[in-house]
Length: 158
Image 1 (cartoon, rainbow, N blue to C red):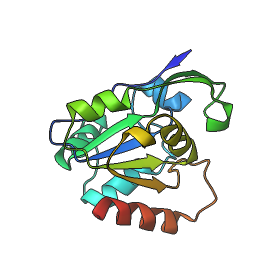
Image 2: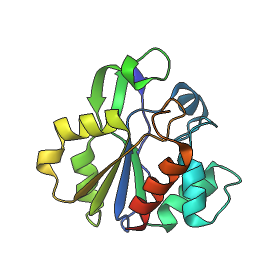
Image 3: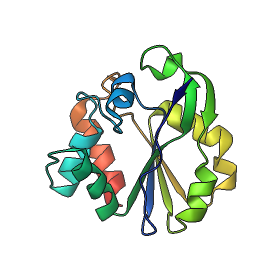
Image 4: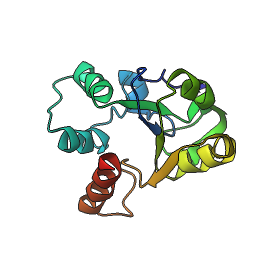
């Protein structure tokens, strides 16, 4: 059974970004979106105009821009990193986080698996804007990188 990470958030968080489950590389590095080909931090760098010399700088950017970062899945069985290989997912306590960070009024689901599980387990109990975006994973090649950046930056800016 693989175990995910704790959320990154503050009492000022306004937008929660939800992934599915950290990749093998992310789990090894103990970093959200730790695989160098995942485009999440590249998008956040363009959004913020910042470079990230290390993971601490990435986490600080999340807090500075009133984001929260977590995964819908807290634990699962999976061989490799593909969402399609996830078995027996155990969901994170999203509702508990929304109680603690009561200023969150927007949730962005990063990819289909995050959206599917969020919809199934939480959507009916959440009263805020929900945005579904294409996955930033390097495994997602259904959208061109330029278009991926455009839809993400639009969602982050509104």
